[in-house]
Image (cartoon, rainbow, N blue to C red; front, side, top):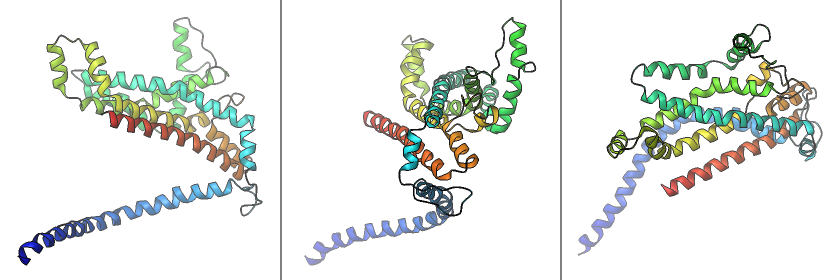
Length: 312
């Protein structure tokens, strides 16, 4: 009686122990491989971010040693009352509005066309993704040449069909749309690849069954493709918004924030205050305020994804 009663309990305790031991055997090598990344992440991401938060409460300057005098919330108050901060934030939002919708729509349309083309599919995949791997400096120089008044290929092309060309990068009304066009052409390949991967996960039998029921190509796109790509679209939209909010390279190289600061983004404002005016403490405060904006966008994305997972 005693043996029959205690034998199963002993086996039940041994099984979790073996599983725990197996997890430890796999967990230690995994932790060892992850350790270099964690160390670098703490040294170059977490550490500077915490130091930046500390500097935002001081009048830190590049030309003075140490953190300098205590400022409290003074830097934050000055930033929130600064017209330059709000104008640069609006320029960043305006650039995001100009670039996000076309990058989502064109990424989806071109991925759909490349997925359905019968021959030369590899060429279209390469053609749309190739600009994305080029450095921002190369892209900027190419488009500066395209936009150059009197010499640019765009003015020449429009002139041949009788259309006058504005001063693309020198006009206060055309500078931001010109930067948006450059960015759409440059970064379209990333969204294109995400949509292409999503299209390849859709079961072809769904299209065959709908074709038997008499559905045309547009009905298939509207009733099958778009609904099944909803999560991909959410991911693309949020990543695109965050990427557009962090714009700096092409703006700084192509216009340096001009003309008349009409294309100066928040990150360029931070750069100007921190490295041109040497006000690192104030620039850190602006960075923290902008971090809150990006964090809010990320929180919205997580909320949307969790809602979609519950409905799935």
